[in-house]
Length: 127
Image (tube, rainbow, N blue to C red; front, top):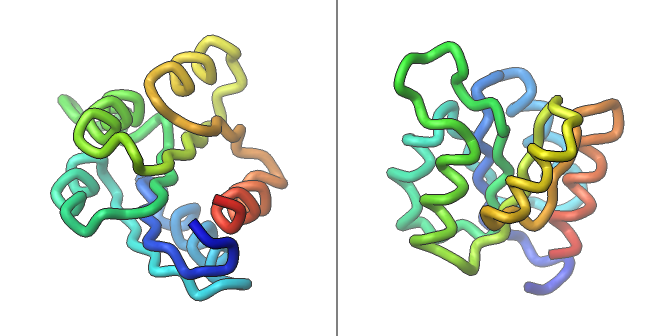
């Protein structure tokens, strides 16, 4: 991928405000094509749009019964589209969760802190 070229980006985040803030930060420098999905299942329904990058919350819809977790969606995405870049984000600081995410195919695991959205934006632009 060319640095500076607009990319097709999926944000999978069940917190509307966080999804919106992340989108605004990502498109601030480069007008990427960003789609926000509140569930992993919604993201999967749109994989035919061939995103370049998926930014996914690890703790997707934990309050919704039978909803797939970010890790489960990650596995499905990577099986069907192994070339898509996936950045997993979470407030979980446990090493085991980061390791699981990387083992399942995420390129990066970002802890949601004050600098998280800036880090993600930089990564997206460098992919």
